[in-house]
Length: 95
Image 1 (spheres, rainbow, N blue to C red):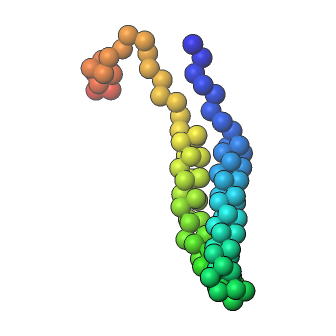
Image 2 (cartoon, rainbow, N blue to C red; image 1 turned 135 degrees about the vertical axis):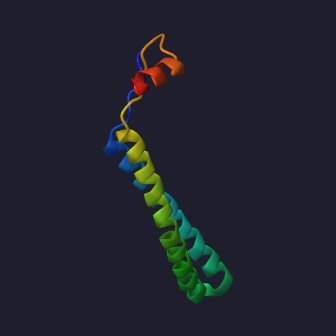
């Protein structure tokens, strides 16, 4: 049975940034709509600023997730020899 292919780094980057971009746009839209509903145009601009601050706080988290996904992509695969147990691996290392 073939192991599943790992996605390319570009595909991971584009997916994470697309999800972040869509969620950032939704946060800005919803915050400005709520602000406009509560206090007219002044409330909308104030709430838009709040939405920008929320996005600035979320951006490092998105970067952390992206770096973690890319690091897991670059980790070498763990190869095991069929029929070898953990005790045999420890003996081989000590020799």
